[in-house]
Length: 450
Image: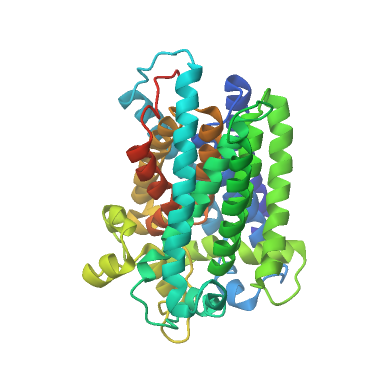
C-alpha cells in the first residue's frame, strides 16, 4: 500500500506541476527559472520519490539507506507530498510577488551593430582574462601538492575532508572555476558568431577549447559527478535555448536533453569510480536519490529547529571556510542534517561524507511548515531577480550561455542540494565572473522588454 501510494501520489504531483509548466511553455514559447524549478521538483520529489520508496520496499536499496526509508508510513507519504505542494505554491507566490515589487520598466531598443561589436570584444577580453586568472589561481593552489598532475593523488582524500597537505593557498581552490566562466563566455561568443564572418573567430574557438579542457581537469580533480554533468549540460542546453524556434521543437529537444543528462550521470559515475558495485538503472538512481527522503524522516523526528539562521548566514558563505566556520562558528545545514541521520558530523567517527540538505528540508528544518513557506517565498523571489538580471544581457549568445548554466545550478540542482553554502559554492564562478564583467564591460545591460 505504501509504495503504491508513493508512486501514485508522486505521479499526481508531477502531473499537476508539469501541466502548469507546459501551459506556460506554449503561452510564452519559453521557460523561465520558475518553470525550471517546478519541472525539477516534479522529477525529483514526485517521480523520484515514488521510485525510491518502491525500490526500497522491493529490497533494491542498500541496507544503510533502507533503515530510514522503510519508516515511511501512509501519514509520512502524504505529509511529504503535501509539503512539496506547499513549497511549489510558495515559490510561485514569491515569483509573482517579485513581479509586483519589481515591475519591468525597460523599453525595447534597436540593436546597434557597432555597440554590439564593442561588447563582443570586451567579453572576448573578459573570457581570456578569466581563463588566465583561473589557471594561475589553480596553479598556486595545487603547488603545495606538487602541481597539477600530482594533485590528483590527493583529490579523493581532500573530497573526504582529510587534509593531506598544509597549504596557505587553499582559499584559491574555487577560483579555478573561473575557467568554467571563461568557457561559457567563449561558447556564447561562438554562438554569436554562428554562420557569420567576424574577426577573432578562430581565437574564440581556440579559447573555448583550451578553457573547456582545463575545466574538465578541474572538475575531475574535484571528483564531482553532478558538477561535471552540469558543466557539459550547460553547452547543450545553451544551444537548445539559442536556437529555440517553437514550443514543440523545444519540448522535443528538452526530452532528449533530460535523457542525455541521465546517461551523463551514469557515465561520469563510472569515470570517477564513485560507485564500486555494479547496479541496475533502477537501483542506481534509487541509491543516488535516497538522501532527500531520508532527510525527511530524520527531520520529522527532530525536536530542534534552526530558525532561519542558514538564511541569515548565507552571504558569509562567499568567503573561505576559515572565516564563516573558524571565526563565526557557523555550521551548515548539511552538516546538521548529517548529524541527525548518522549521529556524527563529517570528519568524526570515520564519517568521510556529508548528507546534503535539499531545499524542501532546508525549509522544514528552519520552522516546520512555516519554514517551507518562507523558503519557498524567498527562493521564488530570488529566481525572479536572477532571471531578470540575466535577461537584460544584450548579447543573445552570452545571455543564453550564462542562463543555461544558471538554470542547472540554481532551480534544478537546488531541489537536491538546497544548502545556501552549496548554492553559493557551485555558483562561485558566476559571482567572480560577473565581478570582472562589471569592472571591464560597460554597456553590458540595455533596456529590453523581458
